[in-house]
Image 1 (cartoon, rainbow, N blue to C red):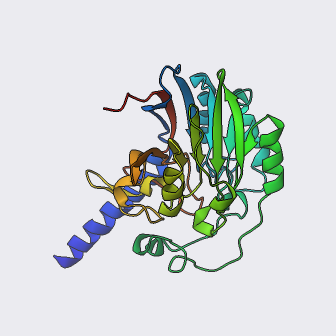
Image 2 (cartoon, rainbow, N blue to C red):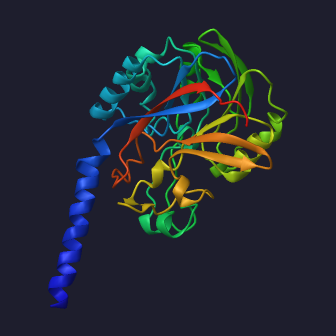
Length: 304
């Protein structure tokens, strides 16, 4: 009896892994939100948020999905890092994003824009929020062509905001952007971009890993909208319950999607992308399909 039960549990687990790897990992979706963050009287505009592509050149269905995003015709593209997982992926990535490269864009990098992925024990990810000390199974990470990737993005006019500020024109309006490096690997330097938000324009914060120290600092400075990735939405979720982990210090209910983040009397709208991809060493998802997000920004309501 116990043997049959154990076999049944193992069989169900194997079926879930197979579903996650063969079906859901390729069930690409576009999510849509309306976000009330613009100044009063401003015309709405759209932001395409793409994160955690983790591209390797052989991923034909993922590349087809990326090509199709051009049909959304956004006014601004934001990528929040972990774009590649192979040294040969920069050219295929830029070809896949070609329909978006005439649109203004900003970007920050994640760790997998610097170093290639390596095998980590899944139990380590599930037992701790960092997924590093318990999950690391050893081996050297390969260097990725970070400078080539940065140059490719900048060649189409996209702006690097990794621990930098920028002022860009989007659909006839000015947007002030501040970004940080990957907080998960302590590449963030918020003091380099800190300071009060500019009134009367959209102040946009961009970061790879949505650690609370970054969200708190940006919100306290008056940034209205913050975009991040990194979490993969939990990657493996329980239907009806959500993510098991966030791989950072956010609570599990904020593993993906829109939420308000409050510091004192200020609130920023935060969008955490569940991401387009995942590590090639863990090529599965469950109850958490891969996604890009189209955000329609609209004027904020007048305060009561």
